[in-house]
Length: 257
Length: 231
Image (cartoon, rainbow over all chains, first blue to last red; front, side, top):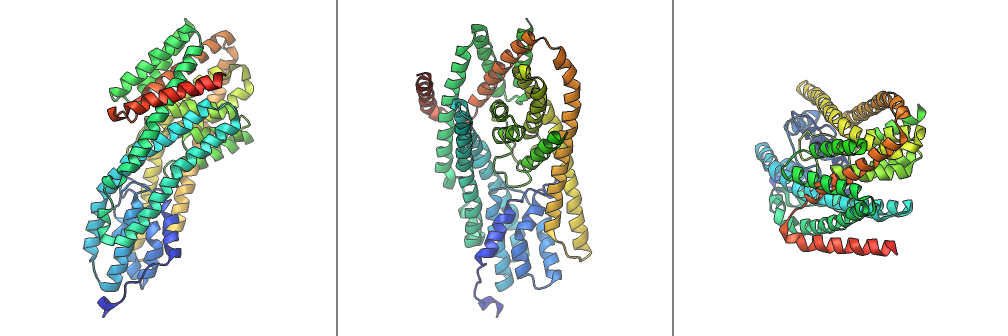
């Protein structure tokens, strides 16, 4: 009887509630269960709907609070898909709790990898380079503010799009959402941001050289020296503080001499 | 003191954007420093510090569960200290900027320890949830999330206030004794060294031979912008 029950979709209000809560997915970040507290917080609107009594709700939370980790933006795919699967489980008794748990665990790796590739390695630095370039070339405070606003929009439109799309795709495709979580689907997105970032680095590089050129030759020499220190030590995979501190010590010595 | 509390509270709230909530970029130095600079009555200083600090931290992005020096915490602490010191020593602004950049590097390490402390505290929330669930009691996540956010903000606030007070009172006698000529020289060399090392590290971002033409195009555009500005 239950299997014949028509699949009921979650109202928009609940999807929006899940989206809003997904912004706090990392609030309870801890070393034992990673982002599972935030994950449960995001699932609560659906949990309250599908669990008939407090015992069921406890069981639901026990299954999901154990462990989960993902990129914070791309976690929305898992939230959407688990929402759908939990609803289906309630309505047609399939998939089983075990399948949902395995599915959720299987998403951890791909979501983290794509999220890091898209957002932390490309989207965030590229957006910030645009902001840095704008601030560098602007004289008036108003223009600088305008560039910061542009950077904020440039970063957050795709950011929020990923969150919304993740929930909608996850909820729409359920267990088949893995077809959507492929780096190839984001290739053009990554390339666009990378192009923007590289272009920005080129502009910024010219700006810094010009700034150094305007000053005394000793200062220009200092710029070239520290540029080489930064470049070489970073390529040797040294943490940022090694080149920064080495350059600062050199600057103090030269300044005193 | 009121200014310090105000700036520290604003900085603590901005730092929540770092990992605890939203992650919309406003905790990054490029945004946080001008906001705090404006609140502290020196937006220009905020923009300048935001630029330098963002440049050196750009190639050092936190990924996943990695615990690395927290550049965002260091930057917020640096801009608060810079505002406080530049009010008393406006003639030493270049040197103060250079000095607070070094301070930001130091605080970024303390910031990493702070983040570990907050994450350990969050583990207690997890334990609390598990205990309640095992006892068959209802769990409400809203207050837990709010408490976790409030605790993070409180820790950041306390960190900002205490560090600023210690370094402000420690550095003021030193700055008062500092010869202006030497301070300006070190400030100038220091700033240019941060520009150089920051740019050197930034070039390593997105290194990909397929994009070399775009690098060149960027440089040409940069040159054109400079010429246009020079006119």
